[in-house]
Length: 459
Image (cartoon, rainbow, N blue to C red; front, side):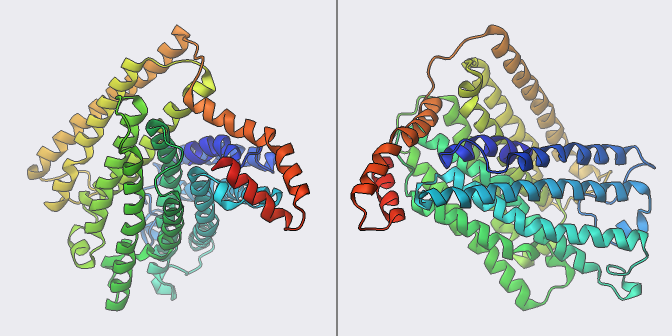
């Protein structure tokens, strides 16, 4: 989140809206400086009374009765700090997107990355308060002897799971949606096309994913004893997400289709992201089946699924965005040989690490266990080999960054910089032209005239 939204979002979102910066700059700075205390509390919890053993889901009653150490309370406070940062940043982005339209900029003029940021901050504003309520109630249960999640006091243990996963599933799209916009920009650049294929369908698909993604949280809870009607609804709604997801994937592929494949680094990362995300989506379609999910729930099949979608998808999006705007930001040219070699090694490493976990999960290997039977040792050996390859790939990336700065190869012209500069330059140079045309045709409303001429100018 700090990389995709705080980094690329702060830099590219104002350019998408043709403005200089976000509206509330001090709120933007505040959202950044709240993150270090959150990281500090998390690191402190590791060394406090042996650490918290609740897992990343913080399920009761383990969190309330099994882990009574101070480390668990510190983690809950760190979640509050990070939630304040996310909400303040999201309100700033949402306000900027709404207020920028008062100058006459129509929604159709906003690019795919801008739409992805808008959907992302909407999901954050919707889901973060729900998690904050659950975390606050946890603190009351632990320290004030309340019984919201304690069955012996009349509480409901499953209520926290609903609160957590109502936040947890939209958070998946919060992490991956900005990468959708970066992939769309990269596909448009490598194909040298004016617009993406079916850009209106792409925008509608992103909006549909954000809307439907808020209503499928309980597919993480098929094993709690859910009634048949609820299982049928969440299974069908989860399958429905595959429709806009397929629209995005085919739109990216058809945008690249017909262009000359020159083995450029952006083409590698774009196609790599599409492959990884598609593979993770296919395994998600398997998991949406309620009856099948009962057998592979909490196995390494689930680990492989969300790592292909999130760990690999979001990380590929970060590296793609870095290669997309690196020359424009730093004004230095990276070494093409090292860049392609890093992608190839990293691509092999992540697949060797996580693809065998599908087979381990289908064999019934459970996650969150420190020791396993010998029959699972083969997949663990492949996983260890893939982790070693990933480490070497990251070392190669660090050396590539060091070599770029040390060699000092200035970049004279980049296609990314040309497009970004042209957006700002055209928005400034056409201002007099637009105002003059609007003034000459005063019979129609001003907003209608401005939208009309901006569409003609940009499209």
